[in-house]
Image (cartoon, rainbow, N blue to C red; front, top):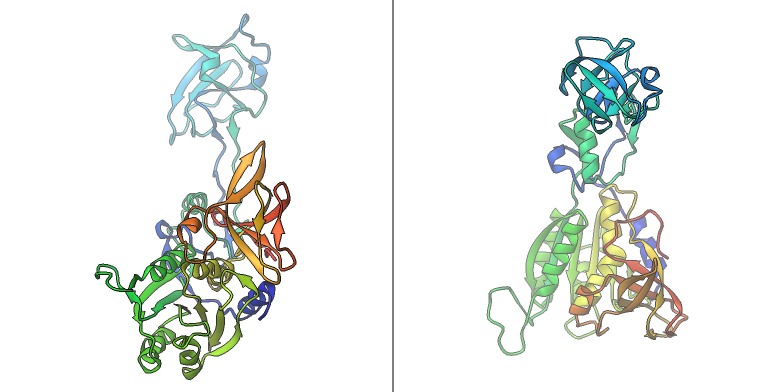
Length: 411
């Protein structure tokens, strides 16, 4: 068996990135930028008003107070999207709206609530600072400025930035294609009756959802029986069309655990089998050409924990992202947490915040077959190989599952 860190390093050393594609920015949220983005214009393109109010010369109203307002002649009202016909000269003002271009001659904007309007005049009750309530040209972006480097995972605000630059499309890495196979004679597909000692094929759907959450395209290839010859065709099909292959089950040491044999027959080079961790010890990882192959355990929690630890970072890396790891937080154990001597334990926990500090408590049964406790968990508490138990009140590190990924590895 190898360590968790050695397994993660081996996986990431095997990654080959997918190629780029051009897509509409309407579809770009959650995608990874394939090339550095350089601004093609200045944003905003002109000085504009940050408030509804009146464009003035600050010097004209420097003495204005609530009890001694300064009265100015009102030249005109300028809607957003229009240009003022008059320049602001001493003793005058122009009524402006949020987003209006600042009229020539003005160097400040007075909020409408700090004024009183009459017939052809405006009284100012508060003296603005020069530049107050004015957004300067280029305050956001300058033409030719590097906005983001390649590898950025695009978020909703980023899409707004792209739109502000007038870019209808963007070059991103394509989504990695991921085939998901579930193995086992005991499995039945959704919608089929569960009879005798059969169980529902839940792993494939959980893994496919995890793949999509990590930015991949998941293809469910159904249930593979525990038979060597019958397994060859679906695994070969997965290897032929995928950047990443995920199988679940059939990878331990039972008489019908045949996945490693199948993969070997199909030319997959196994790089490791078994990791010193719980849950998820009987994990196998290998490659065939540029394709990554993860043979995950069959227990549902083990499969998903292995996904979070190894597959998710690999998928994000294949996708070209720089930030690929679940962030680590430190919190106080609210109760004793048991581990296993000689294994790195990942304990399903709920994160809570007290006075700005994290605390952790078990989210339920730690059996590798109890998926609900993982569905209730926010984090995986990390108990290192040398730690068999953590007492209540002890500081403990945990992988925060729901948080955006970071660049620093957790181990």
